[in-house]
Length: 443
Image (cartoon, rainbow, N blue to C red; front, side, top):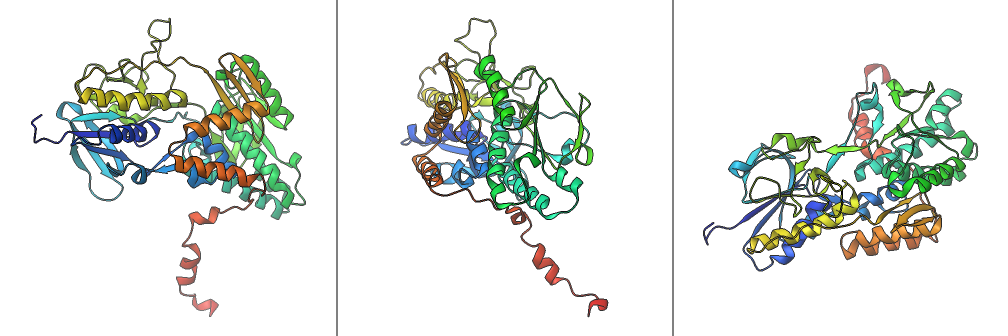
């Protein structure tokens, strides 16, 4: 590079890794002549561990997202997606949300695309299922569950009522268990406004293909979680698979069949499929092959972290071990990545990402949780409090931390709002009906 050339850093993905990498570079290279560009289909970063509370109404949805343009004041933020990367030419194909695609040149590449839901070719899944990775999905689920209560309370058809009050979650990991627990807790709380509906009228079903749930907290805490969910009236079906859900008719491989209007799919994730449209090295799972210092193997000036990166676990004694694609590592890798890029740009040696897994925490609804941290097992209120405290500490920006604490404080004095705003997704329906000229027969 010549002295007149302005180094250009392209960050593909504005999630936790992408946003925090840009934020740290923005701070560390404050006095440098550097151009940082962040590309993401959304103009905000979603802190996914708080999605269950946002779906349940314990947190305001706007408070679990961070506007990229507000935080990354010295970066260029492009709302769109990268459809192709030609690192040999240092070019990426940008598809903006509106307008024609174009090529963007760069000098340093950071891939932080994260993961997408790992789905299966199950009949009816694409039409009925909804994921739980983005804030819009959390809002839609909250509105949908409350809308189903409205339907059940307003119909005289028992089959319609039973179908409306049947809720299925597929996947017994963090996302599935926490979403199920929080949504059921919210629905039970909302039933006080439905005098003819009772908790036993609702059917909540957790479907897990393996023989345990929440493997990250250990077998004891996983078994405890199953007992707690069942104590709250949730059907936990282990070693069971979803075979079909065409037109809302749910069929499980154990022979169970019933109708349901709600199916939440949280059965694992996979690396973003866009990585296949690059000339970067991938492993057998479609993730970027990385070195311990988060540089992509075999290429220059290319970095990656998070769920889309296969990073060697230098703390493990198992040959070839990789860090698990979870939030705990993504949070820490983002900071190491930003620091390493700054070191490399200053001609210094990047440092390896080193973090020994300390344990996990999970929420099971209001005031309940499970945790295993440094070998210490917690359950009930202490685990729930630890879950909130840990994730509050990891929430980006002081602004969002304060807003979340205020939400929790207000919840001590006021009940959650049990109103569905699903019609917000159809704001022009009434106007369209009013704008249609009346037919001659109605005059």
